[in-house]
Each structure stands twice: as structure tokens, then as C-alpha cells.
Length: 132
Image 1 (tube, helix red, strand yellow):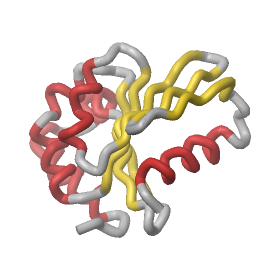
Image 2 (tube, helix red, strand yellow; image 1 turned 30 degrees about the horizontal axis):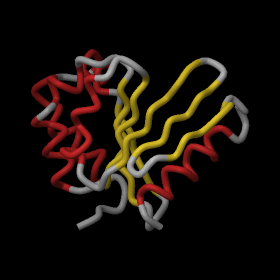
Image 3 (tube, one colour; image 1 turned 135 degrees about the vertical axis):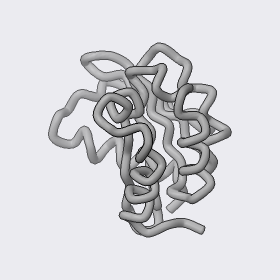
């Protein structure tokens, strides 16, 4: 399954009990979900670097990328940019195994030790099957 399709299924699955989705708009590399409590923007690309610019938006943003070493390096490299948005979530996924992990950079910044942050990313990254 490709990352975009995995994201569509993941959104539907997460809403199956809450029933909050009013409307979904599907575009080439993003999905806009209108819920009873507001809008959520999902930007999808295999490479985090190609969608990291959307982290600056003020609305609720989800960046979905593959769980690769390069994307973990990008997370660390662009950390200051990511922690600026309190409504940002980054999801690292392996659609082939239906595994993922996510991080809320702003929250993570407050609860983690800055000196060990890169090591923590590596641990999360290796917690699911890694894409090469």
C-alpha cells in the first residue's frame, strides 16, 4: 500500500469510534479533513523534507512521511522549525507493515532532554520496521 492510501485508511480508522469527520477533500499530496471541532490538514510525501514547509501553517497540521533514516535526520535538522508550531504532528509510517509512530514536536521539546533528543528519535524510528 502506498503512503497516501495508508493515510486515507488511517484517518478513517481513527475516526471510526469518534465520528467527528464531516467532510474530506482529497488532493494530490494532501488531505483536508473537516471535523466538528475544526479542520486538519494532512500533507503526505515519502520525504519529510518535501513537506516540512507546511509546518509553518497556523492550523492543525499532520506531516506524514516514511519511517526512513533520512527522514529522522531531517526531523533533527529542522527541529527548531517544527517546535514553532504547537499544532503540528509528524507521523512516520511503514505502510507495508501498517506500523507507524508519531511525534508532537512542541510537546516533545518540553518533556525531553535536548542532549538526548536525537537518540530518542533513533529509538522511536527503530521501534517499527524500517524502510530502506
